[in-house]
Amino acid sequence: MMRPMKLAGSELMFGAGCLEYIKTMKYKKVSIVIGGSSMIRSGMLDKVREYFAETGAETMVISGVEPDPHFSTVLRGADEMKEFQPDLIVALGGGSVMDAAKTMWIYYEHPELTRFSDVLPPNAFPKLREKARFCCIPSTSGTASEVSRSVVITDENGMKQGLGNMEMMPDIAICDPEVTISMPARITAETGLDALTHALEALVSRRANYVSNILAVHAAQDIMQVLPKACENGQDL
Image 1 (cartoon, helix red, strand yellow):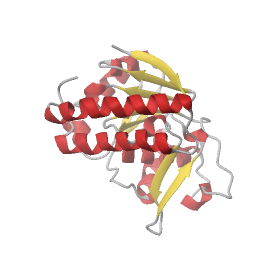
Image 2: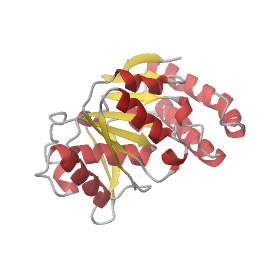
Image 3: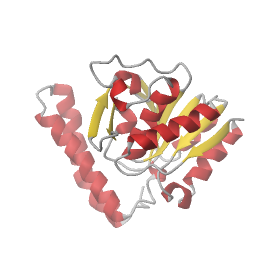
């Protein structure tokens, strides 16, 4: 069942089958960013493109995002977007894909930027959404990049750089468990423990409060209860 909600200004859809929410979206040209071949093998890429086709949207795919994405991958993707001119960018994949796609979005909207340092402090962060909106469809749990304002990119010098700004908060997050069922048990375990770590970090944070503690405790309890079952049978939703 699809459960729409708002989170930090983003539109969040959750529930088995909520991928069909795409059919209600009104965009003309959609760039879909993926990693390797997992979304192709699972059929999810074809399904996403099919749903957008039903709305009349034209789609193109940017593939080859590696784990711990490199800035050169970001620039390549941004160049493909500049040629295609999408009004919606979709990240279909795990945390690396979502981080890379967010950063491609910046350099697509601002072709005058050429270095990763151009968007790091003390430089002003550029305004987004002049050309496109941003949607995440996560294929793993754990990173929560679909509802975060942050990315981690390996820069030109091989250094991992963190970047955060509310401009990068996705406009839409479609969290359909059916997208995740192709995950191997090992990835299910690793990303599930990543989610558990986020819950524990929230509990010990200096900025924790009564409400965040309630959410963090329930998240940790739910993960401890269902993660072993998910690892045993990823098809059990």
